[in-house]
Image (tube, rainbow, N blue to C red; front, side, top):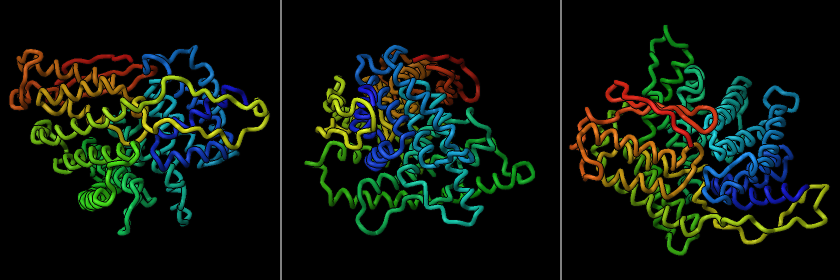
Length: 471
């Protein structure tokens, strides 16, 4: 084991795993130590993440020179994963699923979001294949572990938020988006942990996103035109959506009871942030569930108060992270001389780890999608400008959600709308001052190869123009 291996794995152990949330963190540590292939992928990700947060300039600082080692480990891990796919001679389902999640993060850190989405889709297809396989054999499917399913639910949510329509055929979309055969995390009547509350929310949110996504797809439910199984899946999702409102109300009550018993004062910073994120997303879910699908652009005008609360909570989160971000210096622990080569060290040194949250990279509930929603859907000038400012100064990458990229895109949309309405830049205005005829009602985009994407702007179905953005 080389010095580079040791430092990369140590960074993964103490810093990178915290980006996935508490439950997945412990699971990933054990997986990296217990499986050589997962360890290889973890080393690649840890090395890249260490460079990402150590370089001045953050997102654009990664170069072929300072990522050469990480890319070498990554390519080796890809080669290993191909040998482990379902049906392969060395099939190991849990390991290859973990590696897909780590590859998703690796490509996200590089800013290669198209590649990241392909890794996410690969993992989701494997999960779905295993579900159907277990169902066909008539056996109970009690794996993959909850931590793996939780990671992929977060990844799937991010891709649904981005809109993955252009990445895979519609038939595969419907298969992936069908309700899971595996049980979703449920809250018991007994007191729940914060991790259980968070897992349950992501499951409910996932089902809501699937319904909203499919409700906007041009898919006919005419059984003569659509594959019967796919039509059945769509019907099941629509029926399941009726339960979501009840589920979120029950979840909200559980969350409130938790907050009554567990004061946030004096609790660790990571727990405080998790609570703030859940409060943030509870507001967002309330907005979504009060709107009729498919959503019309003017419907957002009724939620100015809720948008204001989203911005205020986001400011609290950002203010708390700015004082407790990752150290900009590489970790200095040296590899003991007895471990410079040969077998893998089973127990790493255990100095005090850095704070669990980073202002740079997370793969759990984040804030960038909601700040983007406020900036583009709330037409109250001060709120949308505050949302853009928060995205700019937070410098976050939440999977495929990059705050700098989406802040720049939101600024472009705001300028287009203000110009169409004859509003001078910097003027204060309300939603009523921006008629629908002046609004950018649809933004259709897709990630391309490398660090770029293609964006098209529409107003009431009429294309206004397109951009190629680079980051």
